[in-house]
Amino acid sequence: MRGQTFSAVNKGLETIKIEVEIKTIFGKPSFIIIGLANRVIDESRERITAALSQCGVRIRPKKTVVNLAPADLDKKSSSVELAIAVAMLKLYEEINLDTNKSLFLGELALDGRIRKIKGFVSIALTAREMGFRKIYFPRENLGELPNIQGLEFYPLVSLQEFLAFARGYLILKKAVFAQKQTFVSQNQVNFAHIFGHVQAKKALEIVAAGRHNLLMFGSPGSGKSLLAQALLSILPDLSEEEFLEVNRIYSICGLLKGSLLNTRPFRSPHQSISQLALIGGGFYQTPGEISLAHRGILFLDEFAEFKHQLIEMLRQPLETGLIEVNQGNQRCLYPADFTLVAASNPCPCGFAGSSKHRCRCSEYDLKRYQSRFSGPILDRIDLMLHVEAVEITDIETNHAESSSSIKERVLQAVALQKKRYLKTPFRDNANLSSQAVTDFCQIDSSAKKILDLMANHKKLSTRGYFKLFKVARTIADLAATEVIQKEHVLEAFNFRDFFI
Image (cartoon, rainbow, N blue to C red; front, side, top):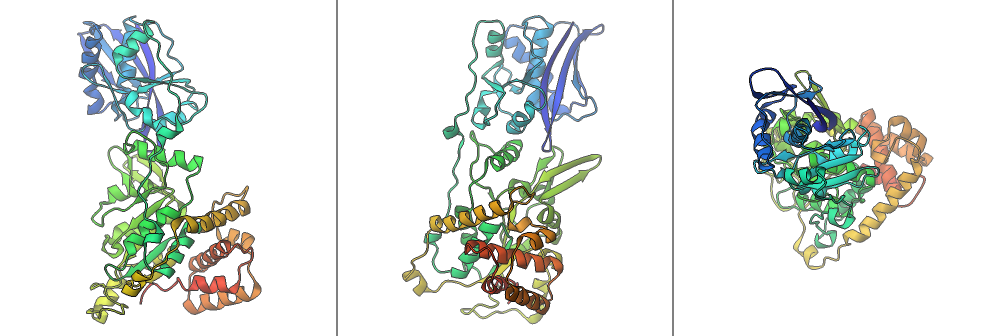
């Protein structure tokens, strides 16, 4: 006698098909799960036994062996429990159902209920590639249902419900993708409610249009955090591909609260964050904050207070949009294509360069504080500016532009970039290679001369030079100009001084 079904587990962002085999063999009556199952799955024996008992099916007094293939892969998810239970029902000939093209996902409760699982979106997106046509999954995951053609989704409340269906007593309704029920909105700060900060708003507009990295310095209370939060309101909407990428990551981390996320992520970890939480990895190989910020914003407030090692770990993802985590013999590659927005005080007391307060720091303290920002990290920052506190008179006479009008210009600039980089591997100005800058960024001869002269004066690295070039290209796109002019280059240079 033998029962067979299929399930799937996530290893990092990779989905792996699990073949569940059950067989009764000669030996002392027992229930054994093999195939590198960890303690979570080892305890599944009791949950499966109790759930089957609720269905009126008792474990036979024989030696029952459950094998989870491939045998050399660590299994750390309870989402295979429904597949094991269905395989046992087939083994005992309680049901006669063809399950070769079906995928079973779900954790069982003692009373037979099927509980929500993590990583449902990731598994659903790869199920068709693995050859499946039907997915039986927990009803609690219904809000995470992606729009995938060629797959039939059957939400289940309990094992009893599935047993009634398999015996022909009940007809299961297929789940239908309902777009209105999948979207979740995040609260956004409108630029119209932020007084003053004309230069800072312009910098954020450039960030949104070209996906450039930004570093803001300013005294406490000058509005750095508020400006960063407002950036979310002018970012382009997620494309369908980006929508699926973001929700796949959030599903694996269990952060989808009954519905999918349709806005770009905005992650703001505290400076006490650990390396594991920021980069990802660990026993369950979970993506970190930089992956949760994929296609969105990673906001690091009090940037200088983060551990030096953590800041330096941002080098690889800022360059490649990926982070590789190696732990023992396990290697995971996570997407981390985020826009970095960092904010920091300019000195230990916070008032260096302020026109309202006198700085109390010595020259030694100032240099020691600035040394926390290493050259390699600063070289990967495209824009930087000093944020001054707003005057009271600016508050009284404020007539700020709204986020909606700024977003219109951003979308127009993004459209120009999409047209320019059509049929190329590039998405926007920020991720252009050095050769691509030369190929795609037309520049006026006088503007090129100024660019070269000022780059030599500032002693910019090659990376810094091309980043400056790309910022000027974005400024020209916002002005709807195909050729970069000298005013665009000069404006780009206004955002190159890190320290006061």
